[in-house]
Amino acid sequence: MSVEDGAAHNMKVIECARGNLLPDRNIPAQLIMFDLFKNMREIDKQLADELLKPTIDFLVAQADGNRMKPMNLKEYFAYRDADLGKG
Image 1 (tube, rainbow, N blue to C red):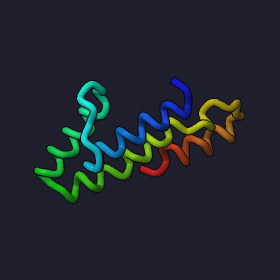
Image 2 (image 1 turned 120 degrees about the horizontal axis):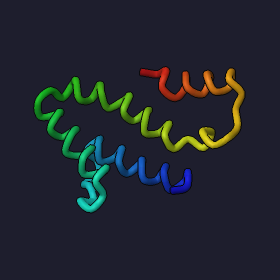
Image 3 (image 1 turned 60 degrees about the vertical axis):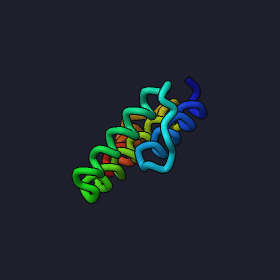
Image 4 (image 1 turned 180 degrees about the horizontal axis):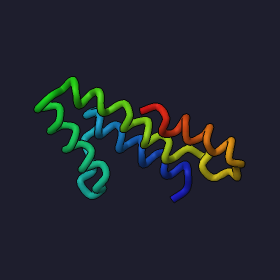
């Protein structure tokens, strides 16, 4: 999957997790995220919404085109901090 395809895929997964898009039941990631966050919201909406933000950050970072470029260790650490250091 290309970076662009991955980003488009993850954006649909994110919209399913938010509850803004009904999942394509043939795409497991959409189905799982939709059902998971729907069920969590039914139990504790505030906590589910708090968990959604870092989940979105992670999914966006997965499809970041910068992942593919060569980096030195300092650049890598800066990338990882921006990538996963948010949580």
